[in-house]
Image (cartoon, rainbow, N blue to C red; front, side, top):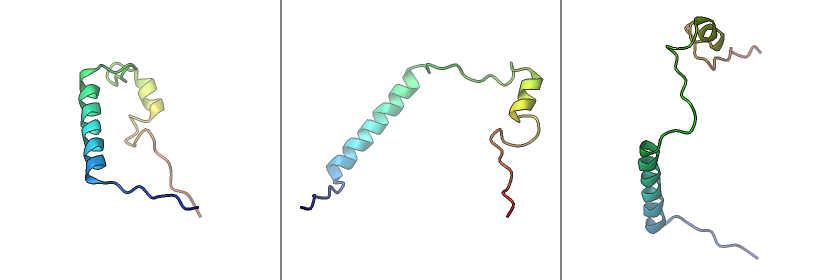
Length: 66
């Protein structure tokens, strides 16, 4: 038995767009539930440990050698 394939229609795309816009509005109006990272208030040794002072991204991953 084959199952029907649901293709996006103009109606479903419009509904998805409206929901994304509504979620964006709520995200701006409601405060975040988690604390933000304050880099200026962070001690220098923690900034160095996280990689903010060495000129690289904090999520720096070295190139893989082959």
